[in-house]
Image (spheres, one colour):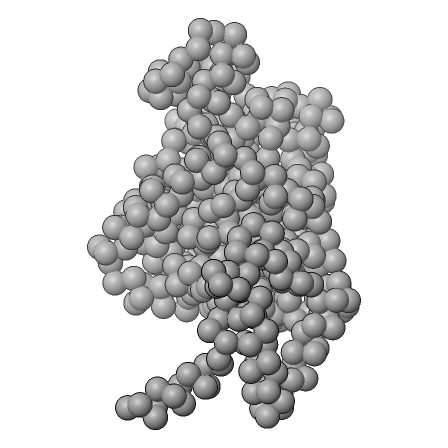
Length: 470
């Protein structure tokens, strides 16, 4: 997937003006947010989250050890483990596996890492047909390979009528409008692809060091067809997804589906270990793991290591007031929302995602719902600090912040400036107490809204007056 994060402001403006998108995005609060709130009542969320954090930290603090353990056990079970330093290297490795086994058709289960790798494009360039089998990803693929808007619900930005029109156009069948009929049509179209594919590619929600296994979680069951039917199975995931033990996986799975879709457990959960053994009736003849770095190791031991705890549930974006208004495409790369605003600058470079750390209100809602206790708002603030240190923000913004910092460090000067500012803003509000236009950096706020004018007195003055009365 191409990086378009530098276009965030323009894209965000377009999405805000798209009334159909605004209506479709209401599903986030009416479905995912309320479902999660109900699901976590069944468990001790705080205690489980603390356990998850401890287990993920244990894996990351000894990442090299657990990856080596995983490689040893997966190899012992008959799988081949390959490491890729970059996403381009990872795509090349998958392409070489396809060439080695004479593959002509690949079926894929949903994987955000393969979006990083632009795997479908790479396979297409070498003459291998790659077909998405997750319903949402399939819809996007037949819609001119549109990128996903959400990591869990990739087609959340579209409504039923849009999909009905697309199916009628691409499938060349009568237009259906009932969801069960539409999903059956998709199943009928995809079934022959499952039966004729040479290779299946899946992501991996987690890999387990002690058994050499990969855990794959879906709600449609397509991952089972991708791993059982083809003669070759390739599991692609990031190196940070390793868990030491199956017990660790159990802890994570108590929170992943609850945080993602509001379910106690996903509909389909596969734990896959090695290729088909002698006497077994199903499974691939060959199994490969492609473990991708792609910038992840650069976060180890640094200020942003906590981001590697992320279990890709999407809760932060479901609850984010910015994402809820603009959707995922505005962010311009694979990962949207608060998690993407940290990951994208970390993976593709801060200079290539200049506006993403600013794409948050810092309200802290993402911190509160994150099952891995990642302090997302703190990480976004650190990125903002780095932007200023490197001179990546406009000079006007840097000057304004430096001026504010100068005044804020001098209490007497700050009190004087506050009194002056409060009185000027009160006069600007006029009789209706609303400010229609602010100068300089404030212009962005008042382009689409009026700002309530203050009373003309500072908080300190009002507080002093109240104390005197009481």
